[in-house]
Amino acid sequence: MIKWNLVLQFIGTIFVPLLYLENILIAFSNPNSFNITPSLIILGLILALLGLILWVLSYINLGRSFGVLPQKQKRVKKGVYKYLNHPMYIGIWLTFLGLSLANASWQALVFLNLVTTPLLFIRATLEEKQLE
Image 1: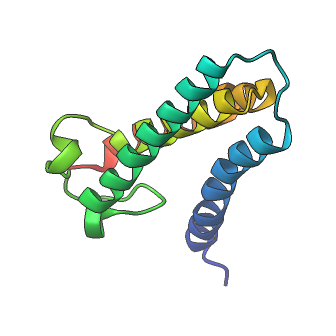
Image 2: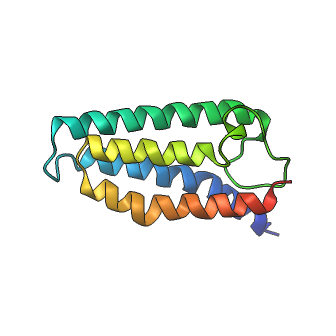
Image 3: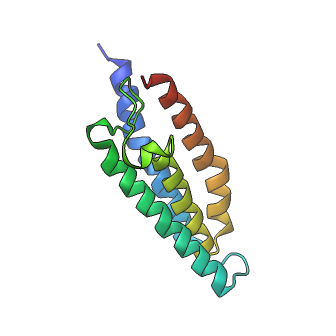
């Protein structure tokens, strides 16, 4: 008998990171699709770096609480989680925004706004319901 809950967890564990990867692939495979200035490239790189730092710090602060799919657990209140509710999702979003700008990829910006941002919002909302 198939345990559908485990199948859905497996699909979510694989599918969600692949969607994040897709945003990066779009940014790098469609560069220079709009007019860009050197200052916008620099701004994009700074945003991507800040996002990546926030993303990594969040991961470190989560420790054993990290999971790809939301699950019932205690709320982390240390490190960057003292100041922000979902710093990892903010870091992911800033990283992808920065990479999209630095590569001048309007396709990646569209994907960020139509797929990645709603996905991050849905994950944060589901996670809020699970945290104690």
